[in-house]
Image (cartoon, rainbow, N blue to C red):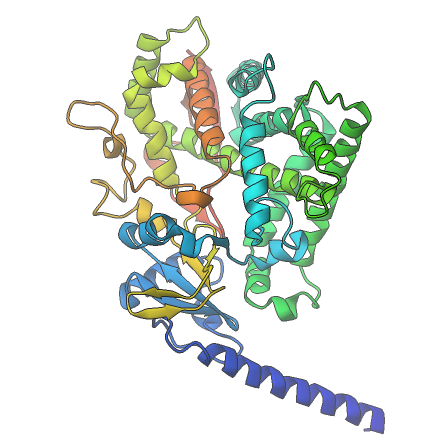
Length: 495
């Protein structure tokens, strides 16, 4: 061994010792966190967490440690909260104490605290959220409403499905394109043809990003970001996909800049550009190109994945339960008929359909771990002290399946949302897209889309599988961050 190799080895040894000391220090410095499985230095609870299915592991921990416990993702403590009572406490009752966005290191490394969804800068989040809620709701007097934009797309989808002539197909391809086109219309002002290469590429990049983030590689990055950011592996593809999506959004923003009419905003990007111009002299403004591009990217991710997964999963469930499908068909025919388009105002007259849609979202349990929160100050909870900036996981899946809140927590049953008279009933434990001040920005849009997509498709079609209904598997293919249906194929049969 020459002197240079010896120096390198000595430096590596010193760094390793420092890391081990740091690991011990970070793990044990917060001694009054809720108890949980004992962590190892540096590794935390890595060896106890089942790769590819964090949800099941975390739920099993709650059986041993209760509805409030701590796990360590590497050197990072995470307080896990389960059950309706406890999750409601941190999201609603004491929501301001847990209002900051928690860390998702795969996305944090790319977004760098910009945009609307993953920013822990509270001023930035409030400013961008307030603006986005208004912009997405309405782009001005005389413009097409969001409902009209959705109905335009769902009618294109129905026409496309009719041309399949009842062939057996994977519905996700069609549904993803339709859902993505709604976001295209809201963000960019126009829809794309289903064969358009840009549309297909955006969908593929979003899907590949989610698959990679949810893979063991993505989970390793979220547990050990300090190390994984420097190592090669599939986790580096996440940033490649995000960069490609960013380039596309930059191109669309540039197109809008060249054709912008401040008196006639066409879409979200136009509205943001107009706001940028108004505040260009403010050095502290949050309305600049970086936040525009990042917010647009984040809205695309949330809007496309949430809706395409929910609609795809819903068709599988209704194919498995034809008696429920028949009741929805009957209500649609009675209230709307088959000759006019559904409208949002029909919802109040369709209690069974509303119950089925709510039960879909509850049963699918799209984001079982919830989106991480972070404490905004030192918090006392059940005698424990949770320091400021501690990550908190509100396990939404344990709320949606809480037996104290739902009569049929583990099965698909619309009675969970119907009273004894067959009328629709709200349930406070229904929080598939979180709750409180930081509820999903697109929650109202998702509910609007689901009703219009769901009812219009069922007005025109029934579903048929090559498999007997008893062989259809509606258990999810669980990933790191969400529940997704197993692949399946059906025929869309004209009614």
